[in-house]
Image 1 (cartoon, one colour):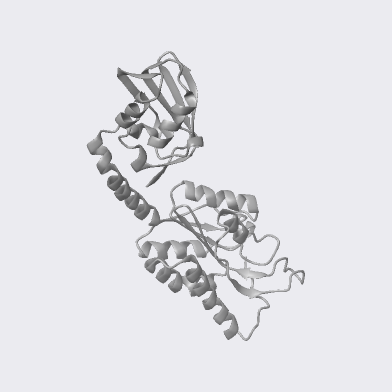
Image 2 (cartoon, rainbow, N blue to C red):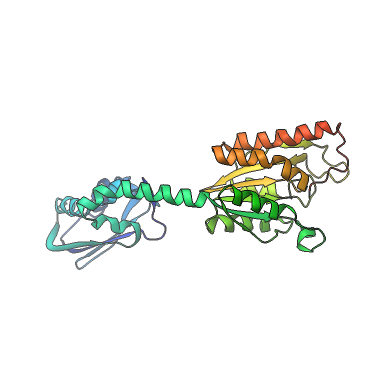
Length: 301
């Protein structure tokens, strides 16, 4: 299992005596013991009885570091010119502190962390936020009927669902709102509106910025540049950022209701983003076909 080190990447060794030690060899020995490439460990300080190394790789495998303190000191004792004293110790903050874990605890740690990760994923997956979009909602010009409907729908499915503030028609603002929702621990973020072909519509692009592999099928295609059609058509989107799933729905309340059964089924059964987005898009395409191709007046806020 891989863990992120973030900014805590230094390892401190005390109780060592150095005499003509090759610091590159020290770095190689530590890298080998921690399962890292040679260039991913460097000695950044060597004075008195303090030896400081920096791990350049931002990720480490927990099995390679947990409980490795004694093995590290033993390996260093074989480096010419380096003596490991009886009071030698290793110190590190953050994840690298697991080096000092007792051997019995280190053996149990991967399974415990895996279980914890499963619990975290399960809890996050059931936390949902609904984000309406559009300046007309922010200005109070139209009623937001989608948010209360989706909140009730999600809660009936066992989600802890909350409404977020309406998002302005601006790409940077939309990216910021989606990113913030993920950072706050929402495993599901539903947006409504902002998926159309006008200049102001930017939700699809915001999700693509966070997940370049997002599934964004067209519901209807337009000729770009004709009328209000700044883009090629109206789309849905399902994307992923770390543990957060983003689903962009169209704005008309009737359409949100139409795709709701598919949305619920896909969430229940854990559909892929491609299957979920395409199946919802099919529902709306069929609805358009049933209207005999009368796309005029089909507004997507």
